[in-house]
Image 1 (cartoon, chains in turn brown, purple):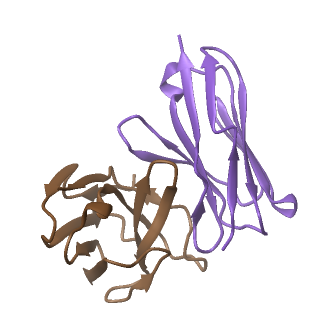
Image 2: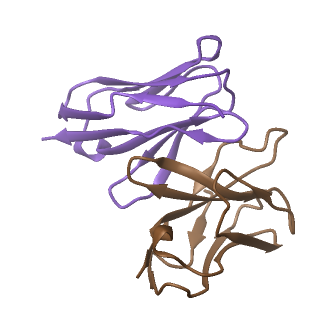
Length: 115
Length: 105
């Protein structure tokens, strides 16, 4: 079974702090994704990566950056956290089989609160 | 970008009842997937179904790609089916806002 893990289930940070959210998958998937989920808005793609050191912006990349130094690990960085970044953050991974968004598997999520 | 509409947004079911959830896309769609998010927030991939019909236990899904919709059937619902069901599709995986399902005993 695919296993996607995220470093924290709950996180509380202060405005202006730098925040790192870590995601690790153990199935050698090429693609990794970061989403945020807000009530009434569904899931929105922040960034994705299809290979080590490769990244592409999703629909809402502003205020975020990412890092993928190893295939199994994809980090989401909030350079200076703001209250409007309070949200549930979900990481996902999938195989690269010609079409990038093939059968995604999700981590348990990190509920981030920025005070 | 592509728009994804899910209906009904909210559904309350008596345990044992059957139901159908629908997902409509504004444009042609591929990579269509259905997910279930449990009350603890975990998203589970139910079906990868770009076309045709698949069944997994009490759940089945049908996608008619040419008509830009997909259906998820829940038969003999159980309380563990409660949660939010999402469909998503296309190259940049666009999600609907979900179907909130509550199954009462």
